[in-house]
Image 1 (cartoon, one colour):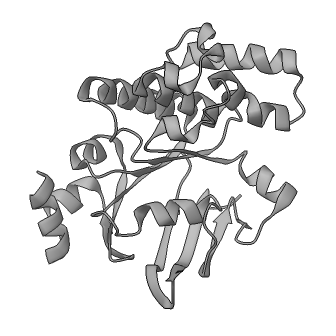
Image 2 (cartoon, rainbow, N blue to C red):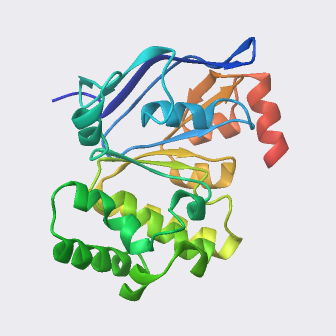
Length: 252
């Protein structure tokens, strides 16, 4: 059995704009253990979301390797990529935009189940059970994204991500667009999932109080590279670099 559920080695991403090229991510390496929560923090433009998109193959790598359960998934496509999505799912910052506005929430949540060959009737049953499990009523399956609140839509997004029972959930600023009360409810839901399902998380967030509460380890990113790594207490209370110190001062 692989020592790490996920390992990324020397990730690199260059973007080309016109005739210019710039490096968004440079030599980023880290690992994730089963049931562990890894926080990734850093100011806007530090490369946090780009790393998440490379892991989930939403952005093509310029360099580096990604290993899932010991298997190299760097270049997977087609059927192998679909199998990868059964193990890794992502929850985005703006849940309303992650759903197709022309489809109901139930259609969005059930898509991955239908792709697995599950019947329409069974998919509907599972979708309704997922909605109830994650704090909504079954009739939300027939509602459209614009008909629900941000918090309700984020719950539906979490239900969609967990429909295939992945081993890793990536949360990319999943609470930042929500008001404080709803943010608290979503965090309570994520903490419950971590405990009950032994899920591994990559938790990208700018709120260090949430990171300190939820994460086991933290990576600080700056200009596309890893500035430092440690436990939340080490990073927040005993930062090693001037950049991390400034980052903490700016948000606390």
